[in-house]
Structures are given as structure tokens and as C-alpha cells.
Image (tube, rainbow, N blue to C red; front, side, top):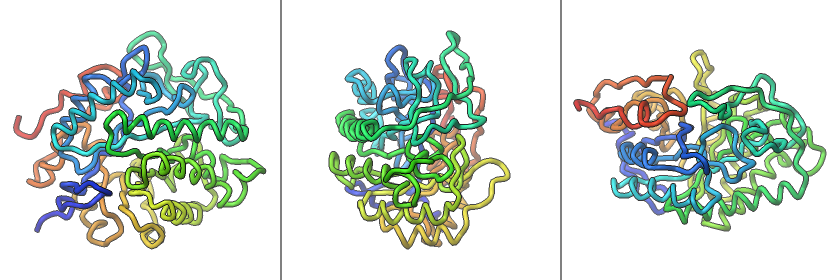
Length: 365
């Protein structure tokens, strides 16, 4: 019996060849100075164009949005041109690729943002969170994050406009669409999750208020490039980068219903994926399926069999495979034929050049 992962699926105007997603994974290899995507990144994504959908690595929408050294941006002419080489290479291989638009908020250090103080929903420091800076060597230097300042209404308006412009820039760079990064403790997540948001205005307090910034950003991007080219990534149960919600099932079911009203093309749920992580509650997956009518993607510790189970149950339409895609550029073909998977070298995930990025082989090579 064919694994349902290998069945085609419609995503907006795209007929995808399978239901396998290469999710966004930071690799920190953008060219310096300027944080531009480059030729080795283009080769890396083109090698993985067998995926039904590629979501490229987190890409900051502004200089203030950068959390880590050597991550790519999409707010300068040079950066747009850099990404064009990647989208061209993926399209030549028949792939579909979305950009992930990213603002880290408080998860950064002044050394990564030109000496500025980071911004967030509230002046709450993320505890026990480190980021890496360029310390003048090829090895990243890890430092503690600092206390951010709470965003003013003008800051909020400015960042919404930066997201809108980044969506337009992504289409100019040849991307087929964009994914809004609203997960993993970054800026939008800092508004959503109750324990990271102490605001007393219309952006804090109730679930509706904490979802307002997300809704306004999505509305701006949909208006700019069309709902059929906008996806959103959420991480309901993760405590990554210090964001925690007191009632994640309620908050994120409400988020799914709100995003359904915007008619976004997909909702991408990042599940917790550390070794002894609890499974996402089945009740929550069912509630999200009922609340959101578009293409639903899950990612986090899936293998081919577990993915088939969630697809057959109708709880997901596509499944993301992160680390397996690092070491297996031909992952869909390996799943199709039952070939064994290669494992990646954790030491080469961030920074460096071709080693650990483009030197993994297809099966049998």
C-alpha cells in the first residue's frame, strides 16, 4: 500500500507532488556582510526539491528582527537578489518554496541588532535563553539575551508594515508564498502566550487581545500578496525561548479559528520534539481540524509511519520532516522505496560552508 505521504495535494494554486514538507531550519550560512542568501544555499534547497513544499529557513524582516549571527534577511535589494538564486534553482527542479518571515523580538542580543535594545510585547527578559553572535571566528559565540523594551503602538504599526513589505519582497524574490513565523518564542509568540505578555492595552490580557497582533500582521500580508500565498506557523505546547501559555489548548484553538477567518492557505503546527516530549493531545488536534479549514501541516519527530497515521486519521494534510531532510536530500524517494535514512552531523548544523549542508548524498550515490 502506498504511503499517503506520497499522494498529491492542492495548496492554493499549486498542485504539490506529495504531502512531504521540508520545514524551516536555521543553518546560519548567509553571506557577510549583508546577511544575503548565497550560492551554497541555493544548491542546498535545490537538492531537496523533491519535497512537496519547502519552507526556507527563518528570514528576518528587518535589521531589528535578527536573533542570531549569519541568518538571512529579506529587507534589502541585495537580500532579495540573493534569494532569487535560490527560488530559481528550486523552480528549475520542479519544487515549490515559501519564505519564512521572522522577527525574533526579545530573543536576540544588542550585538546582533546594531547595539539597539530588543523589542517585545512586554519588558520581560527570556530566562535561560542564549543566542549566538559573531565573535570574529567561524565558531558562534553564545551569550545571554537581554531585557527588551515593551513595544509602543508606533512600534507595532512599524513592524506590521515591515511584515507587509517583507511579503512583497518575498514574491519579488520568486517565492511561491510566505510562512509567518509565529512560533518558538519569537516576537509574535511573545504576544500570544500569556506568560510573556503583561500588556494592559488592547494587545494584552484576554485571548482575543493577545491574538490581535498576529491577526493584524496576517491581515496586512494577505492584503499585500493574497491569502492563497500566506501560511502561518504556530507552536502551541513548546516552551522554546521562554514563552509559555497558561492555557495553550484554548489559546491556540482560538488562533486556528481566527486564522481560518483570514482564509490563509495553510496552518503549520510545530510540535514539541525533544527526546521525552509529550505527544500533542488528540483532543487539541481534533479541535484544530474543526476550527481551521485550509491545509493543515504538523511537524516534529515524525517518521513515515507516524506521518501516515496522522494523514489517514484526517488530522493533517501534510507532514514536515526537519532533521531527516538535513542528511537525506532525497527524503521523499527514500520514503517511497523504504530506503534507510542517513543521520546528520549536529556539529555542522549552524555556520560554516558546504560541509554538513550540501555534501549529503542521495541514496546509492
